[in-house]
Length: 495
Image (cartoon, rainbow, N blue to C red; front, side, top):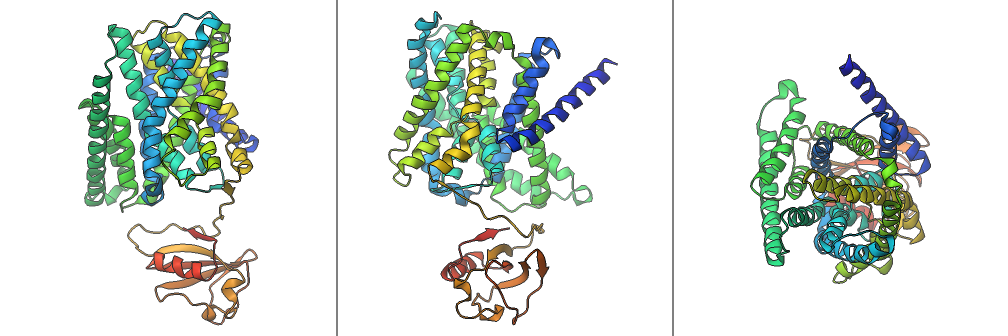
């Protein structure tokens, strides 16, 4: 009977979380914030008693693995290539600078609040919050129907997907110092970081290539659903084995996802749908579990509340902007407003809370205080920054309206031809308004027209009008894009 009651509670939590997600979309708030809120409400005064930090850490690890792997799969290397250098600097140097700035601020603020905190403890508190959260950034950027100029979206996604390893290394290193009572060895720390990053990067790429080979070569077409299970197993193998040989598992699994997502694999559409749904489920479960774990009464204690308010304000206004402008100084392709926007979208989410569990599970003295402060800072970040991602882009004039897809297609993965959607404008019709008057390459064919809510197959003498949407298929998409650009067409959507 107890198991049935537990199942009912779990179903109720998921149901309320789904309703919260719908409400979040209408209110313009991050859905993940409301998932966290649902967990806090149900955990208030032990309505649902949950106090297992070990289980919460395990759930967080599983969720992070899938979130990073799925994020890598959805990231096109052609999009991140122009911002690769900037993203990696932000993911390493930016994280270290944020931790140092925030750690120094905590040391200065603590005496005013009557909090006794050592320098290593202050740095540990800062290190847990030093990375942006991939779950929050991916969720918010991909649900907003809004484009960003200056390649800012791929930069932010690359940074958030790859900066967890740096924060993880800093957190684990400082936990080791506090538990073993040893002094900080910078040379050893740098060597450890380099080794973990190299091992993680190499194994991530290697496992990614093996995964692509295995998915394409194994023949289980009699039960196509098993491909999702196989890919899931490969993702967990990547993280577990890399971590076992002292590499960085989070970096490895993100790179493996990048490799899989940028190579041809069978049943890609089915696998993408599965991982999108599974990722969302794990995000909901992770935030619900973390919400259940917190004690609201502890968050409202003055020494916790005012420390979190101070850190949250300092991180948003000072630490993150300073770290961003210093890290992006060598890269001239970003304007001052672009750098300012990158500094604003430094969202904290589940990752800092999960990292804040490490001191608790390792028996660090004062770990509960760290967890409560980090939890409250995360809420502040999601409320202040998460709700203004779109508005800030508009205010800084960095946003544009992304063309909406008119044609919904699902193509077999083995077909090499690519479909695109083109909107007809007056420039395109300057040499005539029929389809045969439009000069497209021999590798391109217009297969359907959408006009005033109706769809029809065109012929050579079909008259076109400005605003018509054309579904075109091409064997050479790059050549087609060059031609339509020469015709003055800007709204091209790849399907």
